[in-house]
Length: 94
Image 1 (cartoon, one colour):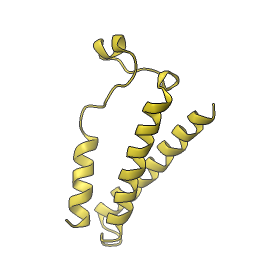
Image 2 (cartoon, one colour; image 1 turned 120 degrees about the vertical axis):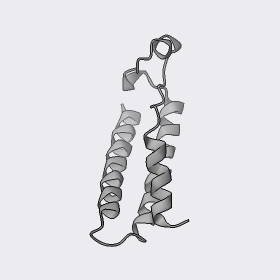
Image 3 (cartoon, helix red, strand yellow; image 1 turned 60 degrees about the vertical axis):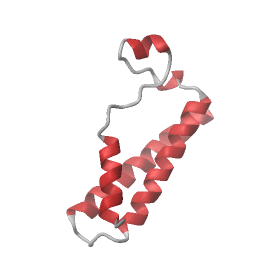
Image 4 (cartoon, rainbow, N blue to C red; image 1 turned 90 degrees about the vertical axis):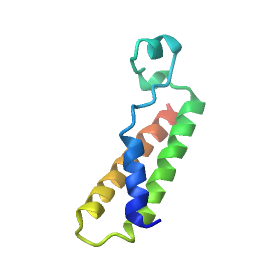
């Protein structure tokens, strides 16, 4: 599988309906919950998933041509993943 295939699969995953974590009442109503309502286990799993996806994109970036739109998109995704990781990590400190 080349770099384009990996990121294509990652992009396909990211377009799926977002998983809503939290209490069942909010899930039944189709509403998300505030980040403060996530438990430690949920945040740990989300962080693991984001880190894994970011690392796959970093590896795939090596195979993408410099200046290509795929490489630019992947670099932006990596930046977004890093920001998400930072925000989640800050949440653990609170």
